[in-house]
Amino acid sequence: DIQMTQSPSSLSASVGDRVTITCQASLDISDYLNWYQHKSGQAPKLLIYDASTLETGVPSRFSGRGSATDFTFTISSLQPEDIATYYCQQYESLPYTFGQGTKLEIK
Amino acid sequence: QAHLVEFGGGVVQPGKSLTLSCAASGFIFSDYNMHWVRQAPGRGLEWVALISYDGHNSFYADSVKGRFSISRDNPNNTVFLQMNSLRPEDTAEYFCAKEYVAGTVAFEYWGQGALVTVSS
Image 1: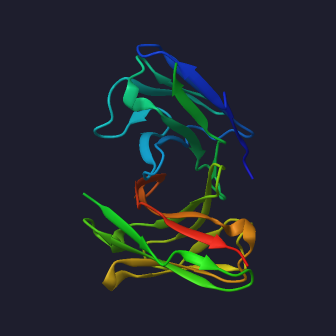
Image 2: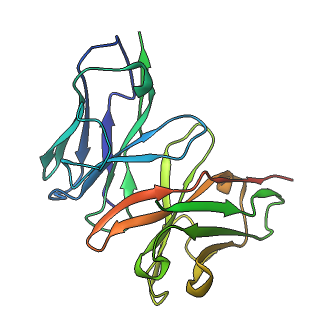
C-alpha cells in the first residue's frame, strides 16, 4: 500500500496568514493526488484534484502543487471559515489512501 | 447538483451484520463509480470499497476484505454496503461518495454519513 505522510498534524494560524500543508507519498504517484476539507459534522469537500486543479466553486486562496512524491497545499490568506481538518488522498493505486489529516485552528 | 443520503446506521453487536444504503440523485447514477469511505472516532478518513459504474467490478480495503460487500441497484440509484462479522474496530461514520470522472479517482460528492457502532 502507498503510505501518505501529511504534516503537520495540527496547525494554529492567524486570520490572513499563509498556511502550507505537506503530503509525502511512499512511492511515485505522479499527480494522482487530491485534497479535501472536512469540517466537524459535515461531509468532506473536494478542494483540489490531480495535485493542482481547483474544484469548481472553491475559492482561489486554496492551491496545490507537486508531483511524484512531494506535494503541498496552501491557503494564501486564512479565513475564519477555513477551520477544518485537511486531508490528502492518492489514487495512483488501490487501496486509495489518505494522509492522517491536518487540523487547522485559528490563533 | 448531486445529492447522496446514507441510511441504515445503528448499534450492532460484534459478529453481527448490518447493511448500509446510499440513495443518489442529481446525476446519472449508472455513469459513475461509487465508493464507501469511513472515519472512526478520533481518526482520519479510510477508503473502504469501490464499485464500478456497471456493478461488474468491486474492490476493498484489506481491513474489510472478505467481510464487507458493496453492490448497487442502478435503476433505483442506490449503492449498498453489506457488513458481516462486524468488529468493534469497524465503529465509524460511513460515507458514500461519488467518483469525479473516469480516470480521476476523486470523491466529488459525499453523503452526510451513517454512524455504525459495534458494541456488545
